[in-house]
Image (cartoon, rainbow, N blue to C red; front, side, top):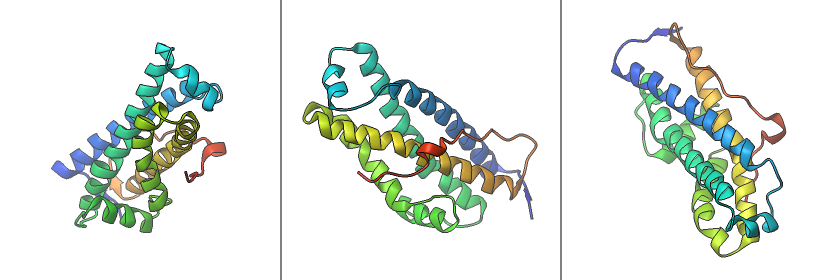
Length: 180
């Protein structure tokens, strides 16, 4: 049974869904530009002298973190409130999302979350570790995209609305979560 959307939580949910969709499009575009070539230790070593490459990297890290934060800390709790559930801690909400089939892996999500610190600090210390973390983040982009799409489809099946933001494209070749 579909619920007709009215009220502040429904409006918030739709607003957040649109925000995450825009964040996802921006992240996917940056991801495609950053990973147009092979990212390895040699790539990392040339990183310091190339401003354009550094800007792409900074945009990627920022967009990756922002999309994950908005999904996990705002959109998911809003959906749970729409389902008349009480959101809990981020970990509780992620576990609930996994049970609902909206998230493929809480462990994968937590691993993706830890990548942000590695991406901010590792390249200054260890180019190989940094390249590995960056490649894992590249793969984890599909976890974020898949989670958004699952929430989107789940909500569409349960909420009546006239306009919905679109889904995000999934790279089926990258549609797995690699563990660092």
